[in-house]
Image: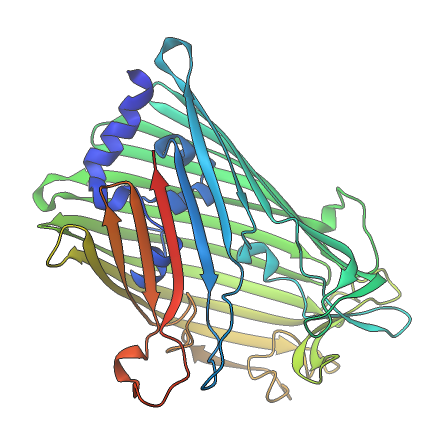
Length: 435
């Protein structure tokens, strides 16, 4: 059937190990899905929904806190969803799906920790509760197309110190609409292109739905070229993001080259990415003490509608990322071990106006204010339990190529005193089920 041809070709090209992935697999095997084909790519290119018909996906949540001895905590931010496919006339197929509860950090990272209204009231930024991803895709011969919408919104209630407070002085909202195509040029070549728009807003001052100052645009592309000599692929990638939010903006341009290869009972990939990034923030963005006396980012709603008098701070970065990932079945076919990592080296230049010592872009904040301008080199965190740090480690369980459960292990687990107690053993647990 023509509707299945693209799926079959992709699975044969990349192997069953690379066909289905989870966020835990990505985090423990290189921190990025930029150079691998996996089901998490549906959030980068909704056309890939046609490559994964009829499967469920979910995540138990993340655990990045350090529990004290005798204490425990439920994981943060669990989510789940699924994709379903239906054959239509002519051997083609359509796909529909949805995901509930997922936090898209590429959008939500622009939200402040606190919002200061015109009346001087300081509120915690509401935590969005609608968080919904919707997918619609179609497989038409050798071409897959798809659309995706993401909505995260909360208005009228804040999350004050793990409680709730009704207020009309704070809201947070993020909406994204994007689409993409995945074209099978031949059995050796595959092209992906995707792009979209987004709108990010917060604070007591509401702007028009289509305010041009809040419009964000982005696009990405990658190309898989078969290399028979290594039983793998050469993978050039490129992306562009121009993000705007009240009082701040970010432009990110990146391009890179990767390679992957299969070996006996295993899979390996390596990539090198160069990037240019510039962020700007107005005087209404700064570090300060919040309602619970902890340091956080504060957005001030100024008399000019919340935009501030232009940019008061700018952080410019140019650099590169080298990353890799490897996984291999050990002892049994249903058990796989993974390890991977990334290293970021970048040159940064920070400039600010005299009235912005505590700008949100200050590289030494929140511990120390920026007293002047300067340039320096930077790198990613060594080990903080996030997708941005150096090394990831994990394992997975594969039950009859149907149920796959992946675990990300805390990096300090092999070095921990088992008799001391406390800490965390697992950072993340994700799973997929195909039917």
